[in-house]
Length: 230
Image 1 (tube, rainbow, N blue to C red):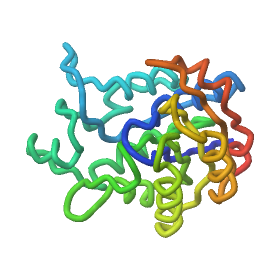
Image 2 (image 1 turned 120 degrees about the horizontal axis):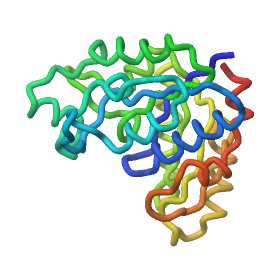
Image 3 (image 1 turned 60 degrees about the vertical axis):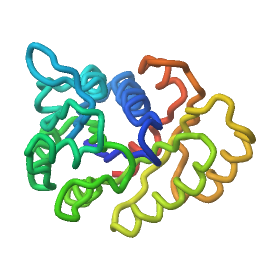
Image 4 (image 1 turned 45 degrees about the horizontal axis):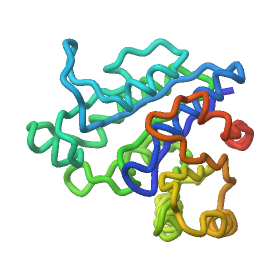
């Protein structure tokens, strides 16, 4: 089998990488080979071998297929700003085509379970009216949505699900990630999402504090729906 997904979020800082690493860990524990890509990342640190993004580093650590850092994250920017603004500052042409080849290269590794992680939410600008969602469309990947459980998440989740379907892609599943431990009416909000989102809930991840490890996250996730979709 070979299953691949594009993972996005309802907003920035909703835990896409946290959930992605948990899913990859769970896949490895199930005996599946894993690969991942982070096509563009801003907010990178300067290291001896070049710019490094902590999210991309975490994704690579959960890949059983051997991938270099630059394969996982081909486009990296130092400023922690929107990718299209960082690209403009760096004089880089950030286009769907510039990201498509490197991500297809990862998919061609034919890992049993592959995740391509976006940046921010679904409609993240690149350049010339293109969005990062256009990359998911070009790759023809089903989508996993990470819902950051906080005030306003229901509208964000439903609008994102509508946009994914309007773009001709399927919503394969979603994960409720409790980014606000003090969220009021958490169970009621969760029940509303479960009743209104047109895809299976892959897990409800509690607030695990800063820097949760993939094995802890994986314990709250269920891959079964993903492994029967694609």
